[in-house]
Amino acid sequence: MMLSLSTAFADDSTQQAELEKKFEKEMSGATLVGHFTVDGRENGNPLREERYDIASAKKLQGDQWVLTARIKYGDNDVNVPIPLNVYWAGDTPVISLTNISIPGLGNAFTSRVMFYDGRYAGTWQHGKVGGNLWGKIEYAKEKTDSENDK
Figure 1: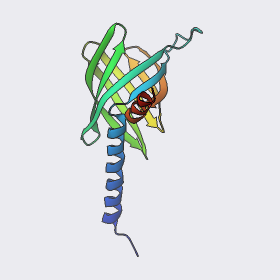
Figure 2: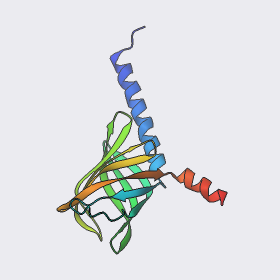
Figure 3: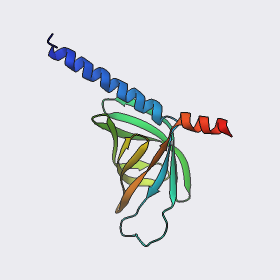
Figure 4: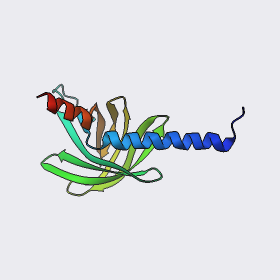
């Protein structure tokens, strides 16, 4: 039996829709727990932990998404909707934002972060300062299960 080209594309679009729904579900309520570096400031000090609580992830259209996140940055602690693009490397989502402004935090934020198998890794840039970031993803279900164990 030979598959038609339209059937192959339909299968691809169905698989992509499933990947997007999975990403939306897993990221909504997730917490990114990890570390970051600042280029040029590798002075032997231990890395500080950082946490980003993701309230929700929502696809808008095409590659456009909005993540609503609690961001602690310096003395700021704010919940903000962050417009960004999600691109796919096979089954791996990669978020991309370029020179965006985040209310209360400033402008010129740029980042590329990939998510896979409970981990994330990427780069960040704020103006002329940048570095790397990486860590694990605590999913909402895992947090609920661990809270129930207490």
